[in-house]
Image 1: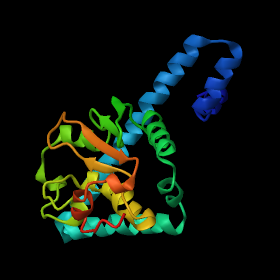
Image 2: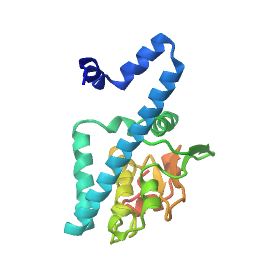
Image 3: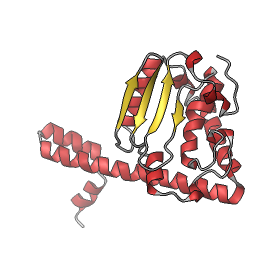
Image 4: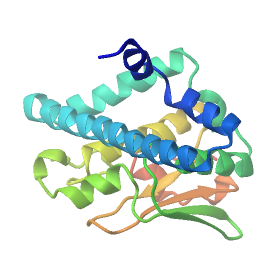
Length: 219
């Protein structure tokens, strides 16, 4: 292999894209971006599948509680590193913008829309590119909760992967600001949308969204 080829193998895609921009090569840029997006989706799906398999193994070895403890410890560490708390305190419209930016620039492109009414914003993911993709991919009970538990909305047969969203935006949010900034209605079947409500006034959040987490509404 030539030295020039070896050197080229280590050149970052972003540097190639910037170079193509400077040289005014739109076809090169399009091809590089297409490859970049394809690789990004592969890595995203790899990590989602990895977490899915890990949580299933944890549950097999030590029960649903081990999965919930794994999530709890992880988000406690994030709390200590101050990685999450600021987003829970964002004004509602800024929070909507923040979450839309995550979905449009994340690891997996998927179709979603945002709706607004007098009391809330609603994200409708058709389907979610992470948990929704897993639900479409498999109905294997290994990957779903076996017991009704607050961490799974007091339901069984909830995907272990999806439960991490409850930890981030419901349970952890209640700890920080006193109420969930996002409440979830996850799909029951492949192809169903994941519906996520974000209430403008926390007093309008239905009490059921606290009760299913084993919490009391205090706002």
